[in-house]
Length: 272
Image 1 (tube, rainbow, N blue to C red):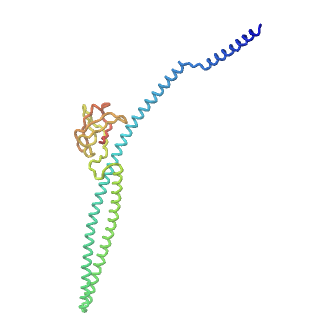
Image 2: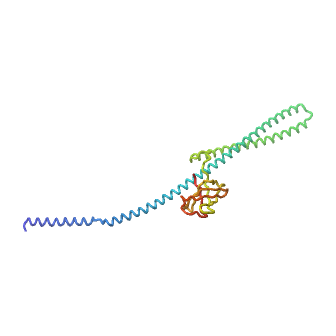
Image 3: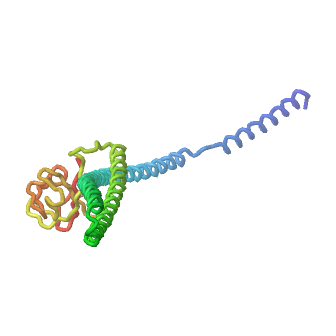
């Protein structure tokens, strides 16, 4: 074999080794794209299931938030009612205070008259020396009357002090309730603040008419709308068409109904 032949033989051997290395590299880095596609499809299905669960959770949270808002509005209405009662108590106490003050002035005037009488009596005593016993008895009687009226004045002053303290406490309570109403967006003294939401049960059904266990005594009025729940499930909505003191009748709204109302279903008044 010549030198050229040996060189060619060596080159062929080296190229064989290179091709073998390339083949091994291709084999080790080969990807099964069908398996990859199936894995991606499975991942997509899992993500879709998770997305659906999240959507259901969001809807439940929306319902919970709406109920919390309604409850908050009802609590604010209760605060407004408590404020009005406190203001009425304050006005009544102020009237009593004015009346007691008038009585106190009358007692003071009476004490002035009594003092004048005592002075006149003293002058009479200096002039009527012969009637000492009678004058002394009269003086004792007047002294007892003064002591009695002094006790009355002390009692009235204590009453005035108590009324003053009560008036200040009621004023502070009214101020606190007013601030609470302002913080929650309710104008103090407003007559259209939402009332406490009445809740009741369905007591009878007939066609699209429903009788409920709450009425005018609970704040329900004609035109109010009530949601129907069975447990935590929303069934539908009714509009009140007739109200009596302890029960009412409403018409089922067919556009919002998700089921047939039954006796025993819960009723909750909607806030506007």
